[in-house]
Image 1 (cartoon, rainbow, N blue to C red):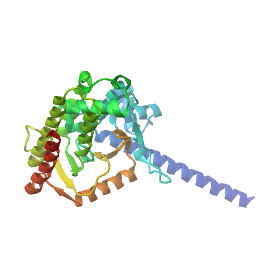
Image 2 (image 1 turned 45 degrees about the vertical axis):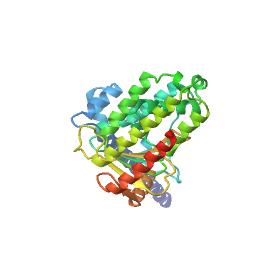
Image 3 (image 1 turned 30 degrees about the vertical axis):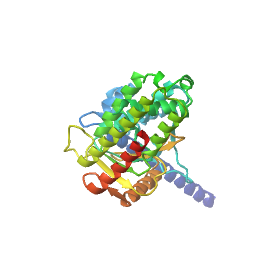
Image 4 (image 1 turned 90 degrees about the vertical axis):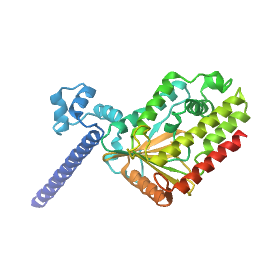
Length: 348
Protein backbone atom coordinates (compact mmCIF):
# COMPACT_ATOMS: atom_id res chain seq x y z
CA UNK A 1 0.00 0.00 0.00
CA UNK A 2 2.78 2.43 0.93
CA UNK A 3 4.56 1.59 -2.32
CA UNK A 4 1.41 2.49 -4.31
CA UNK A 5 1.01 5.67 -2.28
CA UNK A 6 4.60 6.61 -3.09
CA UNK A 7 3.90 6.07 -6.80
CA UNK A 8 0.82 8.28 -6.59
CA UNK A 9 2.87 11.01 -4.93
CA UNK A 10 5.50 10.82 -7.69
CA UNK A 11 2.78 10.99 -10.37
CA UNK A 12 1.13 13.96 -8.64
CA UNK A 13 4.44 15.82 -8.39
CA UNK A 14 5.11 15.11 -12.09
CA UNK A 15 1.69 16.44 -13.08
CA UNK A 16 2.21 19.57 -10.99
CA UNK A 17 5.66 20.15 -12.53
CA UNK A 18 4.29 19.76 -16.05
CA UNK A 19 1.39 22.07 -15.24
CA UNK A 20 3.72 24.72 -13.86
CA UNK A 21 5.99 24.38 -16.90
CA UNK A 22 3.00 24.73 -19.24
CA UNK A 23 1.76 27.80 -17.34
CA UNK A 24 5.23 29.36 -17.50
CA UNK A 25 5.37 28.74 -21.25
CA UNK A 26 1.96 30.35 -21.72
CA UNK A 27 3.03 33.39 -19.71
CA UNK A 28 6.25 33.66 -21.70
CA UNK A 29 4.39 33.44 -25.01
CA UNK A 30 1.91 36.11 -23.90
CA UNK A 31 4.78 38.38 -22.83
CA UNK A 32 6.55 37.89 -26.17
CA UNK A 33 3.30 38.57 -28.01
CA UNK A 34 2.77 41.83 -26.11
CA UNK A 35 6.41 42.88 -26.63
CA UNK A 36 6.03 42.25 -30.36
CA UNK A 37 2.97 44.49 -30.56
CA UNK A 38 4.68 47.17 -28.51
CA UNK A 39 7.71 47.12 -30.84
CA UNK A 40 5.54 48.15 -33.79
CA UNK A 41 3.95 51.12 -32.02
CA UNK A 42 5.14 54.63 -32.90
CA UNK A 43 6.52 56.71 -30.06
CA UNK A 44 3.80 58.48 -28.08
CA UNK A 45 1.01 56.08 -29.12
CA UNK A 46 -0.60 54.01 -26.35
CA UNK A 47 -0.71 50.26 -26.91
CA UNK A 48 -3.52 49.84 -24.38
CA UNK A 49 -5.73 52.31 -26.27
CA UNK A 50 -4.93 50.59 -29.56
CA UNK A 51 -5.88 47.17 -28.17
CA UNK A 52 -9.04 48.53 -26.55
CA UNK A 53 -10.16 50.05 -29.87
CA UNK A 54 -9.30 46.99 -31.95
CA UNK A 55 -10.94 44.46 -29.64
CA UNK A 56 -13.77 46.78 -28.54
CA UNK A 57 -12.78 46.44 -24.90
CA UNK A 58 -12.76 48.79 -21.96
CA UNK A 59 -9.42 50.31 -21.02
CA UNK A 60 -9.46 48.23 -17.83
CA UNK A 61 -10.00 44.99 -19.79
CA UNK A 62 -7.16 45.89 -22.13
CA UNK A 63 -4.87 46.58 -19.16
CA UNK A 64 -5.72 43.19 -17.64
CA UNK A 65 -4.58 41.50 -20.85
CA UNK A 66 -1.36 43.50 -20.95
CA UNK A 67 -0.63 42.62 -17.32
CA UNK A 68 -1.24 38.93 -18.02
CA UNK A 69 -4.22 38.72 -15.67
CA UNK A 70 -6.53 37.79 -18.56
CA UNK A 71 -5.52 35.68 -21.55
CA UNK A 72 -6.18 36.81 -25.08
CA UNK A 73 -8.83 34.69 -26.78
CA UNK A 74 -8.04 32.98 -30.09
CA UNK A 75 -10.16 35.46 -32.05
CA UNK A 76 -8.42 38.36 -30.29
CA UNK A 77 -4.99 36.94 -31.17
CA UNK A 78 -6.03 36.64 -34.83
CA UNK A 79 -7.31 40.23 -34.88
CA UNK A 80 -4.15 41.60 -33.28
CA UNK A 81 -1.79 39.56 -35.47
CA UNK A 82 -3.54 40.79 -38.61
CA UNK A 83 -3.51 44.41 -37.47
CA UNK A 84 0.10 44.51 -36.26
CA UNK A 85 1.38 42.27 -39.09
CA UNK A 86 3.02 39.82 -36.71
CA UNK A 87 2.92 36.05 -36.81
CA UNK A 88 2.10 33.95 -33.79
CA UNK A 89 4.33 31.16 -35.11
CA UNK A 90 7.36 33.25 -34.14
CA UNK A 91 6.71 32.65 -30.45
CA UNK A 92 7.49 28.96 -30.41
CA UNK A 93 10.18 26.83 -32.01
CA UNK A 94 9.14 24.78 -35.03
CA UNK A 95 9.01 21.08 -34.32
CA UNK A 96 10.36 18.36 -36.57
CA UNK A 97 12.01 20.77 -38.99
CA UNK A 98 8.68 22.26 -40.09
CA UNK A 99 8.18 25.96 -40.83
CA UNK A 100 4.82 27.75 -40.82
CA UNK A 101 4.23 30.08 -43.79
CA UNK A 102 1.43 32.48 -44.65
CA UNK A 103 0.59 32.54 -48.35
CA UNK A 104 -0.47 35.87 -49.85
CA UNK A 105 -2.39 34.54 -52.85
CA UNK A 106 -4.32 37.07 -54.99
CA UNK A 107 -6.23 34.46 -57.04
CA UNK A 108 -7.17 35.41 -60.61
CA UNK A 109 -9.13 38.65 -60.21
CA UNK A 110 -8.16 42.30 -60.40
CA UNK A 111 -9.75 42.82 -56.97
CA UNK A 112 -7.49 40.08 -55.61
CA UNK A 113 -4.46 41.86 -57.05
CA UNK A 114 -5.60 45.12 -55.45
CA UNK A 115 -5.72 43.34 -52.08
CA UNK A 116 -2.25 41.92 -52.77
CA UNK A 117 -0.85 45.42 -53.32
CA UNK A 118 -2.67 46.76 -50.26
CA UNK A 119 -1.18 43.96 -48.17
CA UNK A 120 2.30 45.13 -49.22
CA UNK A 121 1.32 48.73 -48.45
CA UNK A 122 -0.01 47.86 -45.00
CA UNK A 123 3.15 45.95 -44.14
CA UNK A 124 5.38 48.86 -45.17
CA UNK A 125 3.22 51.36 -43.29
CA UNK A 126 3.62 49.25 -40.17
CA UNK A 127 7.40 49.23 -40.72
CA UNK A 128 7.36 52.99 -41.25
CA UNK A 129 5.57 53.58 -37.92
CA UNK A 130 7.82 51.29 -35.87
CA UNK A 131 10.46 53.17 -33.84
CA UNK A 132 13.06 50.50 -34.66
CA UNK A 133 12.88 49.04 -38.15
CA UNK A 134 15.10 47.77 -40.94
CA UNK A 135 14.50 46.18 -44.33
CA UNK A 136 16.88 43.89 -46.23
CA UNK A 137 16.03 43.22 -49.89
CA UNK A 138 17.91 40.62 -51.92
CA UNK A 139 16.78 41.61 -55.41
CA UNK A 140 16.60 39.10 -58.23
CA UNK A 141 14.21 41.59 -59.84
CA UNK A 142 13.90 45.37 -59.46
CA UNK A 143 12.01 45.98 -56.19
CA UNK A 144 8.35 46.77 -56.82
CA UNK A 145 8.57 49.69 -54.38
CA UNK A 146 10.86 51.58 -56.76
CA UNK A 147 8.62 51.15 -59.79
CA UNK A 148 5.83 53.30 -58.38
CA UNK A 149 7.98 56.41 -58.83
CA UNK A 150 7.44 55.80 -62.57
CA UNK A 151 3.69 55.22 -63.15
CA UNK A 152 3.83 53.81 -66.69
CA UNK A 153 6.50 51.29 -65.69
CA UNK A 154 4.66 50.33 -62.50
CA UNK A 155 1.39 49.85 -64.37
CA UNK A 156 3.12 47.70 -67.01
CA UNK A 157 4.49 45.42 -64.29
CA UNK A 158 1.08 45.12 -62.63
CA UNK A 159 -0.64 44.57 -65.99
CA UNK A 160 1.90 41.90 -66.93
CA UNK A 161 1.31 40.02 -63.68
CA UNK A 162 -2.47 40.18 -64.02
CA UNK A 163 -2.57 39.20 -67.69
CA UNK A 164 0.28 36.72 -68.04
CA UNK A 165 0.64 35.23 -64.54
CA UNK A 166 -2.74 35.51 -62.81
CA UNK A 167 -4.71 35.15 -66.06
CA UNK A 168 -7.28 37.74 -65.00
CA UNK A 169 -10.14 37.27 -67.53
CA UNK A 170 -10.74 40.94 -68.42
CA UNK A 171 -7.07 41.39 -69.35
CA UNK A 172 -6.79 38.46 -71.76
CA UNK A 173 -7.69 40.41 -74.90
CA UNK A 174 -6.58 43.66 -76.50
CA UNK A 175 -3.51 45.82 -76.05
CA UNK A 176 -1.70 47.14 -73.00
CA UNK A 177 -2.66 50.68 -73.98
CA UNK A 178 -6.39 49.79 -73.96
CA UNK A 179 -6.55 49.57 -70.16
CA UNK A 180 -6.08 52.59 -67.94
CA UNK A 181 -4.21 52.05 -64.69
CA UNK A 182 -6.77 51.83 -61.84
CA UNK A 183 -6.60 54.91 -59.63
CA UNK A 184 -6.99 52.87 -56.43
CA UNK A 185 -4.10 50.61 -57.40
CA UNK A 186 -1.74 53.46 -58.23
CA UNK A 187 -2.73 55.36 -55.07
CA UNK A 188 -1.77 52.33 -52.98
CA UNK A 189 1.46 52.14 -54.97
CA UNK A 190 2.28 55.75 -54.13
CA UNK A 191 1.79 54.96 -50.43
CA UNK A 192 4.16 52.02 -50.85
CA UNK A 193 6.78 54.29 -52.41
CA UNK A 194 6.41 56.96 -49.72
CA UNK A 195 6.79 54.43 -46.90
CA UNK A 196 9.72 52.71 -48.64
CA UNK A 197 11.61 56.01 -48.85
CA UNK A 198 11.46 56.38 -45.07
CA UNK A 199 12.22 52.84 -43.88
CA UNK A 200 16.00 52.25 -43.58
CA UNK A 201 16.99 49.48 -45.96
CA UNK A 202 19.83 47.45 -47.35
CA UNK A 203 19.53 46.21 -50.95
CA UNK A 204 21.63 43.61 -52.71
CA UNK A 205 21.50 43.68 -56.50
CA UNK A 206 23.37 41.71 -59.14
CA UNK A 207 24.01 42.13 -62.85
CA UNK A 208 20.89 40.00 -63.46
CA UNK A 209 18.49 42.19 -61.43
CA UNK A 210 17.45 44.15 -64.54
CA UNK A 211 16.90 41.09 -66.74
CA UNK A 212 13.40 40.14 -65.60
CA UNK A 213 11.63 43.35 -66.59
CA UNK A 214 13.61 43.58 -69.85
CA UNK A 215 12.42 40.08 -70.78
CA UNK A 216 8.84 40.98 -69.88
CA UNK A 217 8.90 44.02 -72.16
CA UNK A 218 10.51 41.93 -74.92
CA UNK A 219 7.85 39.24 -74.56
CA UNK A 220 4.98 41.72 -74.89
CA UNK A 221 6.60 43.41 -77.86
CA UNK A 222 7.18 40.11 -79.67
CA UNK A 223 3.67 38.89 -78.80
CA UNK A 224 2.02 41.99 -80.24
CA UNK A 225 0.52 43.13 -76.93
CA UNK A 226 1.63 46.74 -77.51
CA UNK A 227 -0.44 48.82 -79.92
CA UNK A 228 2.26 51.45 -80.44
CA UNK A 229 6.05 51.27 -80.71
CA UNK A 230 6.20 54.51 -78.74
CA UNK A 231 4.92 52.65 -75.67
CA UNK A 232 7.96 50.39 -75.68
CA UNK A 233 10.31 53.35 -75.96
CA UNK A 234 8.52 55.11 -73.11
CA UNK A 235 8.88 52.05 -70.87
CA UNK A 236 12.60 51.84 -71.63
CA UNK A 237 12.98 55.57 -70.94
CA UNK A 238 11.24 55.24 -67.57
CA UNK A 239 13.39 52.22 -66.76
CA UNK A 240 16.51 54.24 -67.57
CA UNK A 241 15.25 57.07 -65.36
CA UNK A 242 14.59 54.59 -62.55
CA UNK A 243 18.19 53.40 -62.69
CA UNK A 244 19.40 56.98 -62.62
CA UNK A 245 17.26 57.54 -59.53
CA UNK A 246 18.73 54.48 -57.80
CA UNK A 247 22.21 55.63 -58.73
CA UNK A 248 21.54 59.01 -57.10
CA UNK A 249 20.28 57.23 -54.00
CA UNK A 250 23.45 55.18 -53.78
CA UNK A 251 25.59 58.30 -54.14
CA UNK A 252 23.83 60.12 -51.30
CA UNK A 253 23.11 57.04 -49.18
CA UNK A 254 19.47 58.07 -48.76
CA UNK A 255 16.13 57.31 -50.41
CA UNK A 256 14.57 60.57 -49.27
CA UNK A 257 14.66 63.18 -52.00
CA UNK A 258 14.61 66.23 -49.73
CA UNK A 259 16.68 64.85 -46.82
CA UNK A 260 20.11 64.05 -48.17
CA UNK A 261 21.53 63.84 -44.66
CA UNK A 262 19.32 60.92 -43.59
CA UNK A 263 21.52 57.90 -44.26
CA UNK A 264 18.88 55.21 -44.68
CA UNK A 265 20.06 53.37 -47.80
CA UNK A 266 22.83 50.80 -48.20
CA UNK A 267 23.39 49.25 -51.61
CA UNK A 268 25.56 46.25 -52.50
CA UNK A 269 26.55 44.61 -55.78
CA UNK A 270 26.70 40.82 -55.54
CA UNK A 271 28.75 38.77 -58.00
CA UNK A 272 26.93 35.59 -56.95
CA UNK A 273 23.69 34.77 -58.78
CA UNK A 274 20.85 35.58 -56.37
CA UNK A 275 18.18 33.30 -57.83
CA UNK A 276 15.13 34.60 -55.95
CA UNK A 277 13.69 37.72 -54.34
CA UNK A 278 13.95 37.68 -50.56
CA UNK A 279 12.87 40.36 -48.08
CA UNK A 280 13.90 40.28 -44.43
CA UNK A 281 12.15 42.81 -42.19
CA UNK A 282 12.89 43.75 -38.58
CA UNK A 283 10.72 45.79 -36.22
CA UNK A 284 12.31 45.75 -32.80
CA UNK A 285 12.49 42.07 -31.82
CA UNK A 286 10.01 41.03 -34.53
CA UNK A 287 11.38 39.52 -37.72
CA UNK A 288 9.62 38.38 -40.87
CA UNK A 289 10.90 36.81 -44.08
CA UNK A 290 9.07 37.21 -47.41
CA UNK A 291 9.95 34.82 -50.23
CA UNK A 292 8.76 35.04 -53.82
CA UNK A 293 6.74 32.07 -55.06
CA UNK A 294 5.20 31.47 -58.50
CA UNK A 295 6.64 34.64 -60.08
CA UNK A 296 5.32 37.21 -57.59
CA UNK A 297 3.19 35.57 -54.89
CA UNK A 298 4.75 35.70 -51.44
CA UNK A 299 5.35 33.24 -48.66
CA UNK A 300 5.74 34.89 -45.23
CA UNK A 301 7.10 33.49 -42.00
CA UNK A 302 8.32 34.70 -38.63
CA UNK A 303 9.73 31.31 -37.65
CA UNK A 304 12.73 31.96 -35.41
CA UNK A 305 15.07 29.36 -36.92
CA UNK A 306 14.12 30.31 -40.49
CA UNK A 307 14.67 34.02 -39.79
CA UNK A 308 18.03 33.26 -38.16
CA UNK A 309 19.16 31.24 -41.17
CA UNK A 310 17.92 33.87 -43.63
CA UNK A 311 19.77 36.66 -41.82
CA UNK A 312 22.95 34.56 -41.81
CA UNK A 313 22.55 33.98 -45.56
CA UNK A 314 22.07 37.71 -46.18
CA UNK A 315 25.09 38.57 -44.03
CA UNK A 316 27.09 36.04 -46.05
CA UNK A 317 26.00 37.68 -49.32
CA UNK A 318 26.97 41.10 -47.97
CA UNK A 319 30.46 39.85 -47.08
CA UNK A 320 30.87 38.63 -50.67
CA UNK A 321 29.47 41.84 -52.18
CA UNK A 322 30.76 45.33 -52.88
CA UNK A 323 29.10 48.28 -51.16
CA UNK A 324 28.64 51.19 -53.56
CA UNK A 325 26.38 53.43 -51.46
CA UNK A 326 28.36 56.49 -50.39
CA UNK A 327 31.63 54.92 -51.54
CA UNK A 328 33.34 52.97 -54.35
CA UNK A 329 32.53 55.54 -57.04
CA UNK A 330 34.39 53.63 -59.74
CA UNK A 331 32.46 50.39 -59.13
CA UNK A 332 29.19 52.32 -58.85
CA UNK A 333 29.70 54.05 -62.20
CA UNK A 334 30.69 50.80 -63.88
CA UNK A 335 27.66 48.91 -62.52
CA UNK A 336 25.01 51.43 -63.51
CA UNK A 337 26.67 52.10 -66.87
CA UNK A 338 26.43 48.39 -67.63
CA UNK A 339 22.70 48.36 -66.78
CA UNK A 340 22.06 51.51 -68.82
CA UNK A 341 23.88 49.97 -71.80
CA UNK A 342 21.55 46.96 -71.63
CA UNK A 343 18.57 49.33 -71.97
CA UNK A 344 20.17 51.33 -74.81
CA UNK A 345 20.68 48.13 -76.79
CA UNK A 346 16.94 47.47 -76.55
CA UNK A 347 16.08 51.00 -77.69
CA UNK A 348 18.09 50.80 -80.92
